[in-house]
Each structure stands twice: as structure tokens, then as C-alpha cells.
Amino acid sequence: MSSALLEQLIEAFRVLPGVGQKSAQRMAYHVLERERAGGQRLSNALAAAIEQVGHCTRCRDFSETEVCATCASAARDAHLLCAVESPADRLAIEQATGYRGLYFVLQGRLSPLDGIGPRELGLDGLGARLAEGEVQELIIATNPTVEGEATAHYLAQLARQHGVRPSRLAHGVPLGGELEYVDRGTLSHAFGSRSEMGP
Ligand SMILES: [Zn+2]
Image (cartoon, rainbow, N blue to C red; front, side, top):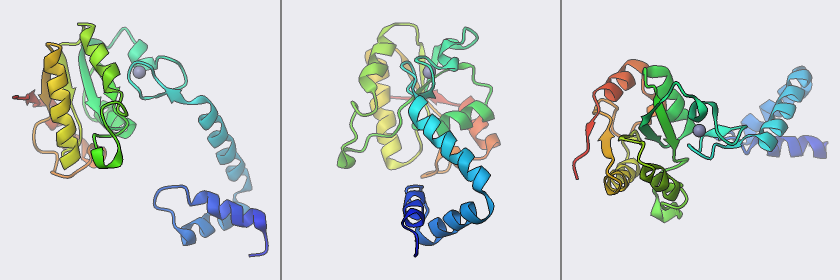
């Protein structure tokens, strides 16, 4: 390698998930050989997003404004709140179902071994939200993994503490699967036939 900058670029690409040394090299060569304009756009978009995209103070989803467009919309049903693990899961539900309620994005799942507890998921904020009294049903759409299920049970308890009805998506989402990768029909059906969670 004859360029320190090229080496730096390759190393920088490796921060992306699933990108190892070989892929990072291909990306760096591709940008420099054939796609300098696109590379510049990527660089600008990255810098702007990192600088300006934060989290909505209501739902924790990504947002450039303090309160995101969905949370600010008067057209959404504030009696329904759907808890998801990630912005990608939120998007999957939004696209697959006709859901018109609001969301709460955990940005993770309970995982004590990784040091991710209720505080890291903003559950104090969720509790405060439920205590406001407007939410009637908490739709728990965490993934059907071991940690997702544990998170679901925690959320159900939190909901009941505030007199809110917890519900869980119907089975059909494959066990261990991530909502983000489930086909639309299956997700739509699982969402539509959700049922109340027992204690
Ligand atoms: Zn929001």
C-alpha cells in the first residue's frame, strides 16, 4: 500500500457492519477509480447526518427535529403505542400494516450481559409516557428472540403498572426472526391478530 490516505479510507469503510478487509479494499478502490462524485456525496451525507440527526424526544426514533413528524402528527391515534427494537422494525411495521398509532423505539433490547438494562432503553421515559394516561394499548413488537421475549415481558409489566393493556404480535413471525426481514403479508397478519399478553 503506497498511500496512507488510501489505507485510512479502507480502515474507515471497515466500521460498516459485515465489511471486512477485502470488501473495504474493493469499496475504496471503486470510489477512487470510478465513483469520486458519488464518494463525495457519501462523504457529505455522512457528515451532515452525523451532525444533524438526533433522536426524537418522544419516541427515540431518528429525527432532525426535537419531536419527529410522526409524533407531531395530529392524524395518528395517540391511544395506541407500539414498542419496537429498532428504527428498521418501525419502518417494517409502518410499511406492512395500516397502523395509525404512535411508536416507541427502544434502540435495542434488554441484555444484562451486555450492560443493556431498562435505563439504556429509555424505559423510564416510556413509563412516564404511559403515566400520562393517553395510551390505552401498548403493542409490544419486540423480536421473537430470547432477549426480545424477555424485553416483551418487562414491557408488559410496565404497561400493567400504569393501567395500560399490553398486547403482543401473533405467532407467525418465525422464532428467532427479526421483524425487519419478515415478509409484509406475514407481518401484517401478525400485527392485525395481536392479542393481550397475560401476566
Ligand atoms: Zn417521535
